[in-house]
Image 1 (cartoon, rainbow, N blue to C red):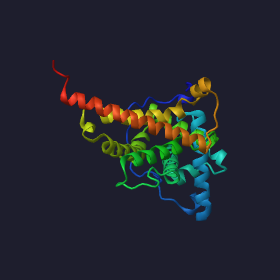
Image 2 (image 1 turned 180 degrees about the horizontal axis):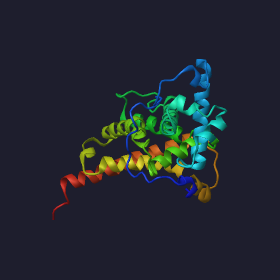
Image 3 (image 1 turned 90 degrees about the vertical axis):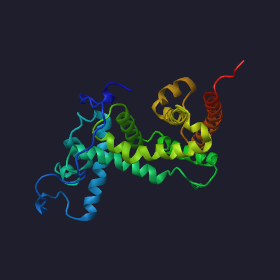
Image 4 (image 1 turned 90 degrees about the horizontal axis):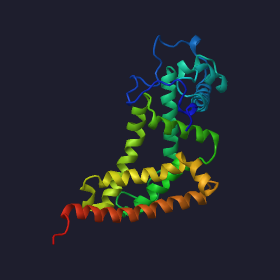
Length: 263
């Protein structure tokens, strides 16, 4: 990722901090009819959706600090006061844009299709991997999906105050679900030092590299359209590799528990 992509002039937020209370609420004096950019509920919703879409483009192109409310409103075809009216400011617009994208992905690509908590762990793992591959790669080369994906990836690398909500509301539940599935596969080995953590990071890293490392993949292996068939093949490969790795990790954990053989 280029320096330009890492948000020009961006402040160095190395710790995720909470957003102010009242996300999405207008701070300041009460709204009046005079202040409203739109009067009907339908127009309000349409303006809000256009602002969210425009925000993803502008933040992805210019970075958080360099992005301006005026440019976002221009692209959305909205009054410059619309961001404050709908979101309470630029910070809350950015957080709402990330939240909207994550919720849209979650609704479109659940991680438990065809399984229940009582299903065999291997089947739950397969459903999880297929769902996560769809969430991360399902947008293909669509510019809007690319903009959103870029912003989520960057938020995890170089966090803003919005990171805390992103982790708490969206990423932690995914991590917890996968941890529960892996405990079912690993059995007692899940309690050995670093075993569960290693498996979690291996799976997330394997899948996410297909997005973050796409340029390298194309360079070394050629361009491949992310068709439904390609996504299925990626998900099946990750699943098989993971199941083999879990078997190996279980053996390592057993050795750690029993200690080296004695002469």
